Image (tube, one colour):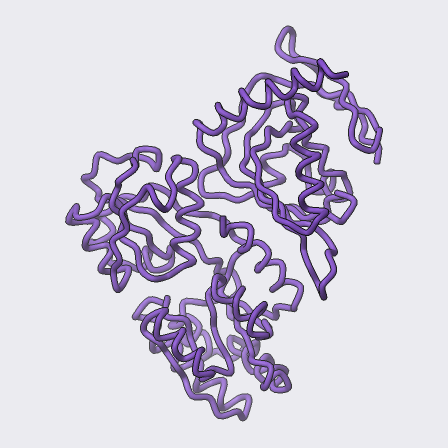
Length: 166
Length: 244
């Protein structure tokens, strides 16, 4: 599913511009600002997607943290949150794991509509009804600063390897 | 059967609801109020409960493993938890807790599970902490105030129902705001046919003027609403994501 380019007007010298290519081959221009939006204390970000990764449910915390409206989120692919500093391998691992019916955990740097980022510790589980996987539920929790720093370094190395291999 | 995690001052409310449900549904109901999670587990093992007002952690097992059907939930009453320390404690936020901290905790698994998830932000796991098991949240408050533990885990509803004097001696480090997790009313498969009568009686509580007193006594002023199978499954999936 094609997402329109971000309309965010980059502040002078404050944002980087990047054209992302998603797993389905679609592309999108995004702007990233090097500023973190802190994860709200005590909250969980909850969403549900269909088997194709299209968002069918988003809770209030998801709407607030993503910067999008609920109308913009429902019907959009979950990769609307993809940050250019996330390696493709992390998402490949996610989809391989949940497609096999297993639970996936991982740290993710997400891109907000306004170009800011936020880190989450995500758990994705297949929703099994009558023995059949019908959808996926994703719950995001607040990660520790130590883990964010650790994963930031790791993802940076993975990205470098992916770019070198292209 | 009512899960043993309600405030003692709600006890009368449950008896009042039980009386109303019997008179309006025509069903004979005997109220079971186990005093601990262990006592509840014993009653379940002996198959003593047809209807259960269950906490979300137990609901997952009851629905998925024992085949109970969810049919109602309280309106506007999500299950949240509080981590609090003594008012005079030098701890100011969750991140001030360190490995080795002593935490007062009851046998309420929902509260411990959600609390542990909140503590991830402070880089603390189950094995990093020293757990001090207490019988009640009130006992946990006493230990916390006396400084015998660094912090206590509380069901938010019970924390907020502690006396003003008690709360003035405590300091909240964090309170969850999840909203999507609630207690649920479950029916055993053998009485699934009675659910419509029970639901009609239950959702009717609050429609007569005298009923408001009952719901207030129960601490559920909004009454109960229907919960379908998919809504229950969604909550169980959500609980599943919190297990590890």
